[in-house]
Image (cartoon, rainbow, N blue to C red; front, side):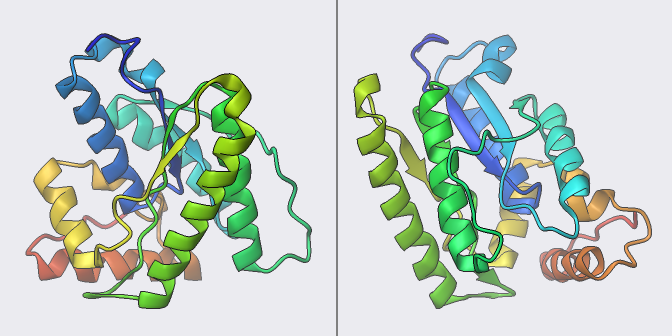
Length: 217
């Protein structure tokens, strides 16, 4: 497979652990398919998505750090093609932002989008969250493909880590040699802010279960 034949891939990244796993997986898939290593940054690109209002700046920086560490490209932001009302709920916001990201991807020539959302909740999976991810992905992808039909091709959306628990994601990250220290919650110094502290503790527990310790920030 040549560079031009490998599907141009957009990774919707919040700079968390599933996102860095997605970057490494996409890079390895491109190499395995015969894509030149030097061209991967043009064929696989990470873009900020679903950022927290409390840690958005840190997450944006981490998206770039993860991209640089894994050899993929990075966008500073995903062009908003669907506006979100300021009073929209978190559920409404995620669905609308997902649709906007898919439309932006289609307009930019991406034919494959990876949304590394996870329903992991410790060593189990949140079934309600899993259903949300599946429903939103299906609806948004179908609508975006219809809107992008004039371009001659639709956009495919993948959610490869939706069913994985935190422990399974930690195991996968270690097996793949992912640069865990580029996750947004690992890059923050001190970690005294609630969102940073809570997220770091979440993944510290997951990695401890599989016998690995996250270095202190």
